[in-house]
Image (cartoon, rainbow, N blue to C red; front, side):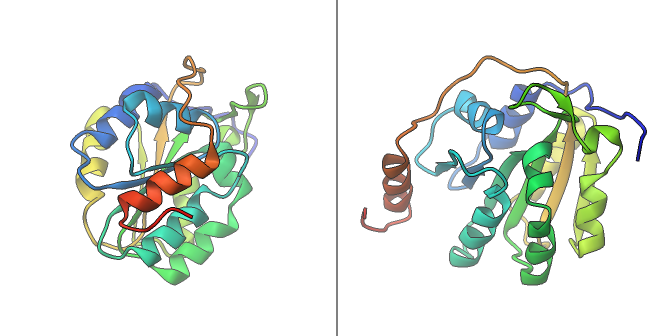
Length: 198
């Protein structure tokens, strides 16, 4: 576990752009910070649910959404730091086994939002292997763009919860801020699903 294995060579913005290409009615939940900026940079959408001040919650919000919207595909885009904070979510997701949920972990091996300190993933912890041991039927470590394309093709499949650790460069791209009004984001998302705002 002491081995330093921080991040990879992929560009985070290009990865997220590819994942969302041709998304149609895909529901997207973003983790705190950079994943939200990356999804926003790929294009704002009514089906984007941006989390603010909810560190560690993205995967569980994705689980709730996947269970309540079984006819739609749900993609969680989060970072390794946030996924580490919500590690127990992986066991719960595996037990609940939503076939329509995919978790994409942008793994730069660092805690990007707090000063780029080396994370547990950067020291060798493989989040995809943790998910596999919890019971996820499909997991992968992605280091090449061709593998990102494979993941994108799998998002709409119903092969059980899926998790990919995507090894990205340890750098902070310029912030592209999504709407910061939580009530607006919630109501816009609800209306996109055919529900009244509250």
